[in-house]
Image (cartoon, rainbow, N blue to C red):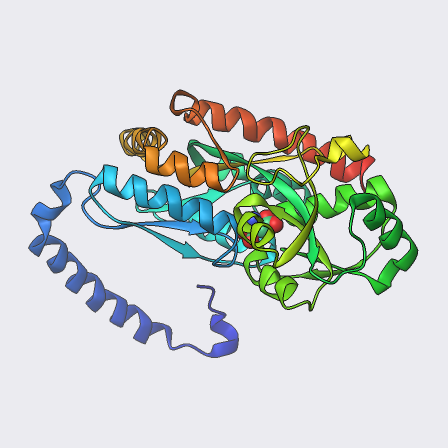
Length: 337
Ligand code: ASP
């Protein structure tokens, strides 16, 4: 909390007296619960922060893995959504949390674009200990049910012709849905009005309600709605058709090969978390990625679970370093001129 002492006219001596009293009370409390400190980790529930709104694709991935990790760790892992500013509010909250293993972050590509798009706000490599990779998730270009274009080719022609009469939903600068839109625009010349949300969970509600025209979002948020016909799908950002959506062509088929995009997800702890704690979290993650229920759930949503032996801190760190450089290059150069 930042308090401006000069403008609020805080009585400092009162604050100091109060904090001394609180300090004494705190010390007595610590003495009273002394033996609890020796309890093995984890001795209470863990919070896993998702930096986007509830009900979206990242939230879905987090809830699947959090439940399984909780079972493995013998403590609940509770997902908390701290959304806003392209995910940087949630990222910052975790970065500033006590590095004790009780506050974690699950995030995706937003972690790699943040240093370029929000300079000075968050430095992912300096702020976090990687725990491990979770899953790769393709994206889908989707639209409200009665949006006129019916194929990707028609969408490209329609959005180019209609310009700002068309609206595109995304979850804030640097998020997967935003980046996918930037790629689409750079490939096709489309310049729709962009409508930012705190996550694509709420954006999906508006897409189903036909308040916004189209978006690009992870299959973990679109598969069920495409299958049920609540929204229409034009393409998946892969080089091949995916089993859950056999009628949706890959972007490469329509000549949009540069839109091939797999959104990798990883779990992080605040920098300074003790190695024995991150090791425990990594092994809980690896065990979760061996659980049939987890693999089946991911499979239904076209998420490709990372193999347990690759769910390591070093693999996540390498991915993050490479992607920070990749998105810096693309966002400062080729894509945004
Ligand atoms: N994955 C984000 C969400 O969960 C949205 C995004 O990255 O576009 O809402």
